[in-house]
Length: 204
Image (cartoon, rainbow, N blue to C red):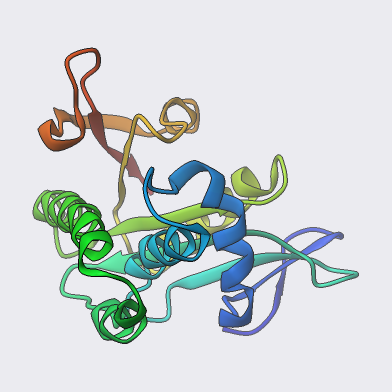
């Protein structure tokens, strides 16, 4: 995709994988598992990020025009898309003990279940927002707004996503998304609080 000016100060480009560590840095405090050392926690969070990168051309980043500083990123998945995260996992997980990898398996099972559940609700002309990270206030809203117009222009009908209580799920309701399904993921729940999940849809 050619470089595209979205305003005088920013530009939209295909995501450059060299910026992936910046995304991991941003969500590391939010998504780190309770067990393991710093290396394992980063491995676990990088797995979550990479799990959302499908083999397609729907990976975007919003950059500051003057400096190329990363402001936000968004990855999308179509029905039938696949990724390379399992190959990455098999290689990178070799340095961690079985007990820690077993803990990561819980994360993998959860992500797989929610991805499959969301995709099952989609039609062939729907697309899923798999990962959406903003590094600067306001940048994420700008990126999502402009990409929604781009996707609409390509003929996509609805934008789906899933999220949970660990994320700012109310943000999506404020930006035109409608709640399609609410659930409880029992393995992450406890006697004091249910771990709630949410699937949203927005007409493009």
